[in-house]
Length: 362
Image (cartoon, rainbow, N blue to C red; front, side, top):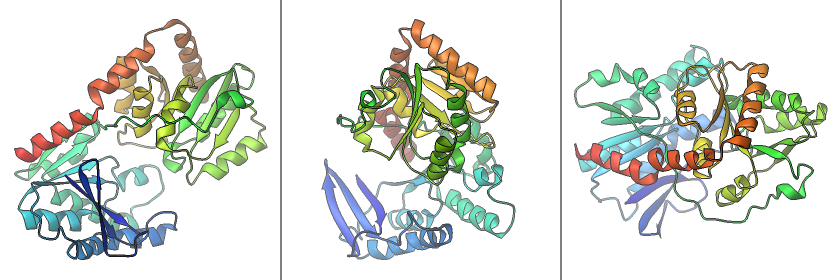
């Protein structure tokens, strides 16, 4: 198997590496991270064309592939994916984890103007290149109903997946902080507009009287600095913020915590099972979820009994859900086992790989 990916860090057109028996082909492309939105959009637009040009200079330029699999986000990969498909006369499988620009429209971050129609056209072209699209949940399949009307196209549910991480000792030690000895709600991941993190800080404020409960946030994002300022202004001494840590440190961090937080802005209309939910399940950590109404994730959490859910974005409802979860953890000794079992049944790498390969063979 070969993985091709864009890299703004390399100076040569391509770099070919081998890791655990897999080839990794890094192709020079414009920078798309930690820059402004306009520069990022320009960089992502030109990215696949840079990748194609530099791929043709690489030793793999004449390889024939049995199938092409690519991932969204980004919505801009299609020109390169289509080039590889046509050269090898093979099928393509698009894994969708973010229906953009629809979610930005739902949240009021974008209106139906020129930017929206530009991104929508790019996204629809990407869909047209795929033979099969794998979505996260059954609820998202309905969005692609018209797309499936063309012959040869197939939509299927492809659950997210997660490989076993290496076990590194976490640089964050809860017992060395002012939250030592408390039951810890932890959030590790991106803190951006899509997460709607303000509600979680409101929850922390509600729990100031609970000296047995604390909140830890780990990561970065466009909202991180603003959220830290709120904590300082409100003197939330039950909240700690930390910069992101290595992924392999996450399991040890979770072993020091009581429950994981899943947060999604209530304006979302698409269905989303965030990757952090998988990391919680993999670590046997029950979840407190504050998510958009009707999200398929709510049914997963309730039916599998791996946590508590709030779909109203009402702080009183969220507080009740958090209290219920804390009470449940005191009585339900099997909840961590159910988390592990759900991960193994639905979110393993082997399950995802088998499904993709079967689709490319059809």
